[in-house]
Length: 375
Image (cartoon, rainbow, N blue to C red; front, side, top):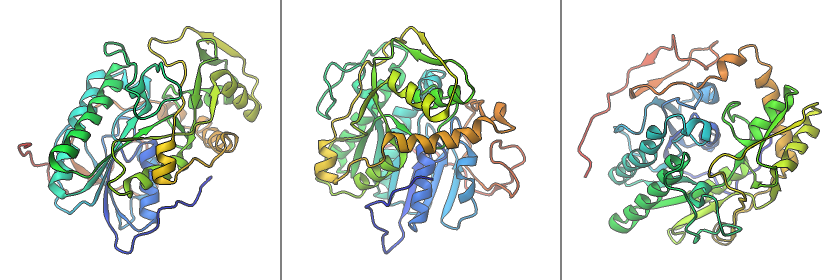
């Protein structure tokens, strides 16, 4: 695994950190890192797109606890909470468009519940927002003060507008209640534990290249993206969380190295030694033409910059997908889980299970979620 040493130091006294969406791509890496630093971690995920296999190595760690729960429902925790990373929400168009109402509720109602929990626990909270709040931008590159160009009625609006509404709530809670709330606008991120079927550029291209299938390019391939390796993003998230209150408002976190979709496709073909060809399709509605973060705020206030070159990060990601694509249970792992009614409960995965399914898992006793009025 490609790793870089974080600039965030281990604290003398362990803190308790709640990570929503903690079994997902970014969330599970964050849980790994926090536990390794001696933090007590409570991972909350409804497993809609998260995987138990992502957090299975942590399941028996004394500082780690997993709760299967949908944050659209109230979450009751007895213990003190010091930090909350709110990462819960499907982040790829394939998954957030499959259940647009659920996506909007997760962004808005789920964020409201986490903000109320932060107030109750006097905890610091960080919202994982997205570059999608800029929509199909008319300003390039995108700085935090740019208000965006978003179609509020399109198929991507459930995610774009949901994240924008969540940002509004975080700012209002900071103004009205003095809540220590931070907002990270996350640009395209890649690395191990991405879902094979999430429809994102790098995961799609790698899987198709490994199978020697035609690589699907929407548009003419000249649209651009900027890709940040997951370890770099985690450094930025931690630095933002632990920064002083002078870091106000949203903060872009992403890699400003801009590359066209066609270039990234050819780079992946080269790295995989694939026989794939390029196949072009019409550009989906509201798909942004250019995307590049302006990260001066993060550079100045957090002293953060991405360090992992794209070619190096891709080699690690290709290696990960090589194992996933040719796994015996490939068809099973490519299927997303349906949304189900949330049940707040802790889980431990017995030795010998692969962590993909949930059948047969013994559930440890945990208090039921207590419904309480939200002030």
